[in-house]
Image (cartoon, rainbow, N blue to C red; front, top):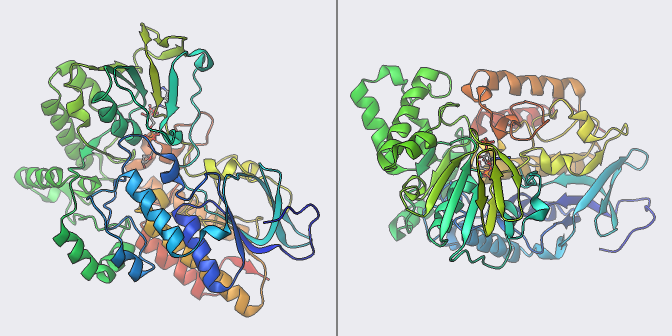
Length: 538
Ligand code: NA7
């Protein structure tokens, strides 16, 4: 890619792709199939996206390996061997490296390069992007494959610069292994990342202190080596399994109960919950079909998990602190763990309730709360992400009328189908806000989006069109629909990152589409079949 100082009359590329994780890699592959030239920009020095950055000990996907993988190439899904029920970060990264090599995608990726701005030039009908390395590139289409959980929330604690020890964010973990042996370590945050990293550190460090503001519900993973027979069976029936996953709510073959909690006897409910706990994983939250609409049904499952916490954690005060009571189970992202609750039985693990005694500052020697000073050698921030929108709004994106996307989204993201934004022609967001994205097995959602975008670009090429943009009315209608269906669930009552509640000042809007991947896919396909209803194509 050469530096472009003056903008040529025609685009340098047909498409610019931002990000080389699951979404960017598949997008590049599809663009090549369409015969379109593409340049991908990636901030890391290799592919992987979220799985490139999240290298913390214990990082593991909570969707089973056989499902959290591409389905677009049968050769790929047949040849790749998964080793565990749930894939650990290094294995996912190896898989994505393999995908990049197998489909020869690296030659179109510009690594170590962050996109700083993207501006649509209405006169030339092209996107002009600038990078942190001072380059400019132009393209007809700009495709943001920037990830939903890829903008880490920078720890905003006073005094951090004064800390004499080492500190880490789970989402920006060093490439070299970190040795906590003999150290006093703090973990701040008890979402999925904190719950995964803490038991690993507890096993290594002299002392671990977990700073918890809000307890989360966590279900055991019961992770294990993947039996040969299971892998073979899946590979034999992949087409059937994939079709079922794509038509499902979550893009994964969970066992969705068809029964209301109140159509079951107490004994049946207990048996259902026992079976789901024994099986482990996120499937637990699909135990009743009214789980997310009826608080009383949800309470039954939540009580079950609270009782489990009480039975695992020996110290009653700790157990009580670990029991979530402020939200319905599953309305904040459910966590899936290995030995998280049992870890609190170790003599070297302490739990600090920072809801009762907030962190006031980081000191040179550790962490000060309103109640005490704690000394540490290392601090691990597992404090999460500016989810779904953060990776988009940190780029200065300017549309046709000169309005920044950040300004347009001041009161919450507005997008048609989570794919395109009115006034931002030829700009596509893969798994953007208003699409099922993070509520699903995101690889299936990514494939659906990439294929829809590729079909759209193919149609445009065939018909000689070179500009597509959603109508404002279609966008408004979609945004209202996304909000309406979310309002029918308990999810909107939780202070979750789904709601933007974890980022101070972020508007409280339920970010993903909760109608399910299968339904969403049907809607997208109908819209395309209707001549891209709600879009203007020129
Ligand atoms: P999450 O789920 O957003 O968790 C972040 C945690 O950090 C959560 O427990 C927060 O408490 C806590 N937090 C954030 N800021 C603070 C401050 N200032 N003080 C104390 N505690 C704080 O992020 P994860 O990385 O764990 O997981 C993100 C997703 O990645 C996950 O859901 C999976 O989909 C994969 P809070 O709940 O806000 O009180």
